[in-house]
Image (tube, rainbow, N blue to C red; front, side):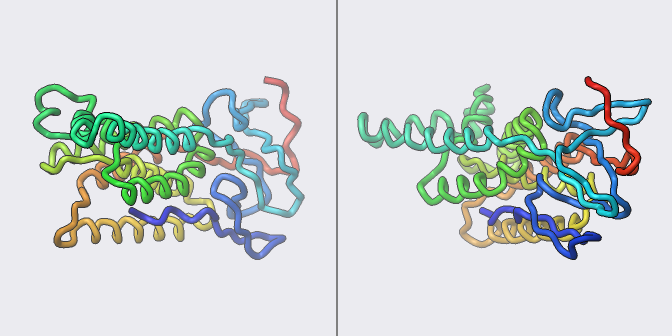
Length: 278
């Protein structure tokens, strides 16, 4: 698997020459001090769009000083990423429980009943395209995927919001399984398609918000991670299913670009009136 995205965005500021903050916390926009609006946040969350006199903007809750171009991007507190992490661990634990109580044969049968097996999917058992994303073939496989999910998931959820994060994870996982079904005969399990989707969604986020300082560096880093993993998957004797990884990745990029919040400068900070109640 990959090592996860970096948890900071480098930015060049007026008052501070260099910042290191999380993707969903502090960023900077080229130019003067500004308020930013977030388009595409889940309704009711902290970044709800407010309107005054036809202009949309939001209060970030963090004070901005005149002459500074720093602003805080509101982020939701992540829950779903940790719930998915627990679910992956629980499914693996369930397989161990079956093996201990009913034997290895029963455990293998249970495992194969949920895995992506092309013949079964072709016969109509489409649920396997989803259930296989929560199965893992061993403790190392589980550990790498859980570590990657722990590294990237909370960051993506914080920036994207709950419903968008859930949609990206599930749809990327399904897309990865479908690509594997179409292009690989391997029996496939693992959350890597969904995790590559989160990585792709991060790329989509920075592609959609190129005004954020550090976006080019982040995109370059993500491209390097992808290239390394594709190389490892293409190595002789590898059991890595690159088709599943790429299916999740491309789906994540598309969903991230479409569904990620778009940060837009709407007014000079110093001249913003206090917005009326919603």
